[in-house]
Image (cartoon, rainbow, N blue to C red):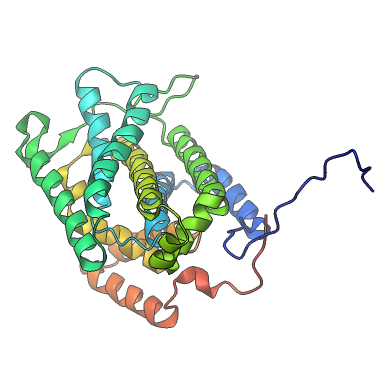
Length: 330
């Protein structure tokens, strides 16, 4: 029992707005992801290391979208623009002779956030379908801008002659080493978003999602919270774009097209809107189903559509809603 002179430490009680890491199954998943290159190499299927890298990169982009869509109630149809900005940042800097990842990747993160801040200043003053259309319009403006810039490949895009240079004894031209860098960045970004959601900022953001008018009446600066979330989501998407450019060694305006934003939306909806792991589950399901169907038929889009329709009908709240059991706190 503490003495009267000792301060009593206040421990914050868990909130229903908190989102646990579910270590009971997320830790084994992380171990599996860490062992994946060794397993793929042992099976003679090194190709799947590249597939896993692509899944993690899109999972990062989808998780950033889920931050504003699932937890902030902002349905953005231009999120792919920030991915494209990050990718072009790497491509343009590399064309200028700057291949350092320590320069290009933070620049992609900052520029993605900067563009999101500017777009958010305008689009967040609207709601509903108007917000959707404004974000779509900005993304298409950036798409046509990059198409018109012939110095950077125009509609054909631009190829990267090498991957970014990270140093530290790492060679990112190795698919295995690049995969581990992507895995590390995804885990760090994921943990940062989880901590953010469990903090006061995340609780307020979720309150805004439920009832924006009431949160404003309580004195919360709603616009400011939404703008910060939108900016952070754009920055993380920019980082995902930088990684995507390195993974494919190619940058194209198609990364900014509305169809790419639609694909990210489908990933979030498929995994579970408002679920912490929704972006990861949706990206993995979408890309792996696509990978399987492509190997069987040239009409894989129809098969993918049928599978997605079945998932939406059977699990309208996403794949993560199928997980049974009580919520874990960790």
